[in-house]
Image 1 (cartoon, helix red, strand yellow):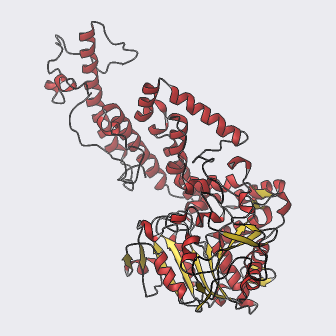
Image 2 (tube, helix red, strand yellow; image 1 turned 180 degrees about the horizontal axis):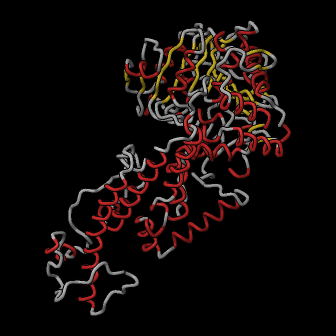
Image 3 (tube, rainbow, N blue to C red; image 1 turned 45 degrees about the vertical axis):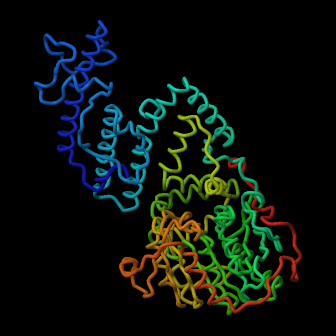
Length: 592
């Protein structure tokens, strides 16, 4: 996080000694520079503006090595190119390699900013390590203390303040403060869009139009109900796999994360591989759907989609994909179908999906009885949980990238954020029906009973994941901060059918949206099942390129042979409207 030596416990005495030594050298050298400046200008620089560390030596002559007798630095070294403290020195502490905040050269080359940076990093390390080693508190409270200490430390970074960020200082000088005026305008606009709540703008919200430059794969809506629209995509091959492919996306955001642009669209790519692709597009619910339950999402989501797909194609068995909470729903649906002797799903793929919620990472800091009770009271008043609450919680998992970067860019530098499709999707949060959200948070995250046989009942049917015996493909990502891969791996031990587990590089979104043409992130496979994730990873083989090709070979083996391609609306279901449909366009006011 803040420093490379992050895990070293804070040695207060050693850090204080080093800190004092650095301060002594720095301030004595600064005092000589101040006196040098005064001697050349004919007037003493104000002690109020630049307080004196020690009086300059008697008989001081500008340009002489005033500090050489101290064995530290000479006045001559302080002039020439105008750089203060122009001498090599090893840093006491340096930012971690993944810390992007201090990339400006001034953080290294300018003594003031370098000192400010190291001072901040030392204090950050000391604060975080002090909290980390606290004893005598329960694990949940300890985790919360560490999490909020990290938030505080990162909020206080010198990069987040105009006077201590060299990029902002330079921009302010170059534009004569216009950057700050523009930043204030951006702040006002964001407050107005959020209705008084800061709705931080991450991308150019006017740059994308559904069906034009985002979510523009051709297809038709062929079925809809209160909770979802079912989209069937137009084929691009003369023949297709006999078994259609149903994708169940999360309803925390929207399905078009899988159909951003043609070059990175997973939906378009699946069509090109010869699949008849159907996708559920969930509604953005209002108070009228407050009573919708998790069971309703099962019955009116995947199960009604299966009925509709059979009418549209004549096929009674399909392959299915679930992403994130959509994968949790798919697994629950499979267990429900196993209990009711429904065999219409031939294979299932889960993208970054939790079945065991024993370790969900930092999101757990928001899950305890007190906070859930507050959430229930809030949702019961409105009938739903606003999308911004979930979005803000997820943004806090990567606060420097998803919060403070935009605070600096938008408000201090006065810039408008660039057009970025993934961040447009990330900003398009959806509401959660009160009944469903309460049930999901309490039974999955808080009680973690989905993994237990009969731990939950859906539509009056006890759910037992062990009854799932269809072939399953688990895709997790190494840097996932929402569904940690070691926890998703535990799901492979909860089902009974054949399992293939693949670990992609990168995170929850970028690791999934990883087209082969980009050749950006690789993946790991292991043909042998292991009892624990560490053993699996130790024996895994790394592959360059996208996991998409590995999955394509796997799912093709469950395709059921080839048949002539199918056009949307060509079966027993008439086309309702063009893809991506109307449900996806329902955007909350704060995200508009």
